[in-house]
Image (cartoon, rainbow over all chains, first blue to last red):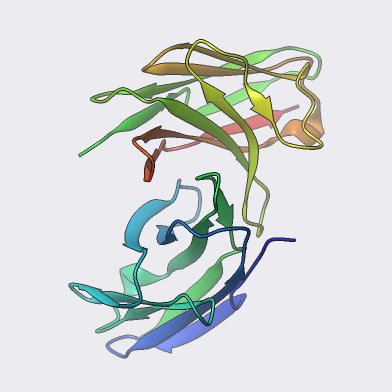
Length: 109
Length: 114
């Protein structure tokens, strides 16, 4: 079966760095997405990785290792507004997204 | 950037009635639209995939007679929840895809059935 695993909840301090991990097992692979979702809102796109390596975009970076079925989202200089759920999703061979359950990130002052 | 809108954003209806949710791609043509349902503290659940001009493909366990999907044009898809019950109360999110990977989400519709 297809499976996406990510931690349920993480806590970090304002100004610090946090890494959210995601492991996956899917039928085929056409890229991995990270989305941010604030409570009561639809997910917003953060990053897309299809090749191995690190993609940096401002305070957010995303890493992918296809051989290990592993990705992480790195958030630097955390701000209170970064408190949200972070969803990992993999696009399978049929170009459909398989979603993880999301990681709730709590930022403390 | 690509924008997807949903209407209404929130709706309250009585048990037994039907409610229609619209999903529009505002500045691009969507070859495929997806409808998701989000349960509290759980990941998004794909309900169905619809391609313009053809019948929607429903995921296992989703009742196609209850959740009617119409993809009338390349910019509009509708989800109608028929004979709604309180357990249908949820957050419904649509997304629209252009090309093979670009997928944009609507803001979601919160449905409450009383």
